[in-house]
Image (tube, rainbow, N blue to C red; front, side, top):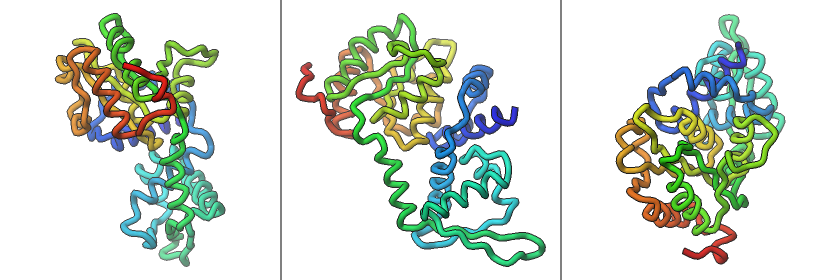
Length: 276
């Protein structure tokens, strides 16, 4: 139960980072979150480092907090931690790596106050996280799998990604022995970028697309938003701040997606082999 609660708070943080101010927690959302594995040991540490960066006003300034603040909703959610001891363990790890400088102040009113400062090495680590997938040649696709979107995939998204020089990966076309959700997470981690198409039926959004977009965004992976014109009204209001590729037909989607990928990500290694 506690693990599920921690994963849900991680999902909420990722949604906020994606721009969704008031995420809807539906039954489907809870089911999808419960099926996820806990973050790998190094992931909470990296996410806590990103939180520290988010809280740092300017380079070289120290942030200070008490034990109560160490288990604040924000820190716990960003690092998927359930106790003050877990947060302290992660901070000690970041300190040993040289990514932050920790300083413990004398107790004040029976409270131990801890200060932390991002180091140059810490900023270098953050830069590594942003570039972690720079050598990847694949783009992951999150979309609604339905007969009505089959052409959007075959003649639009897939070809658009290939035109830009990358391999298009969609989880239902992968050979896998693991749970599908585990495979989705693994493929997102391997990808240079993620294309999320928010086209949906009248019954509302597929929560998984928002989940996958938020997860990728949390990892610092570029997310490209697309949506069929007539379905744009269903897209969550907060994510409309992002520059969606709004398309009318697969041919337009193919062209505009290829152009967007080349402009934002750069041409992929297979560019010379692709032809429109």
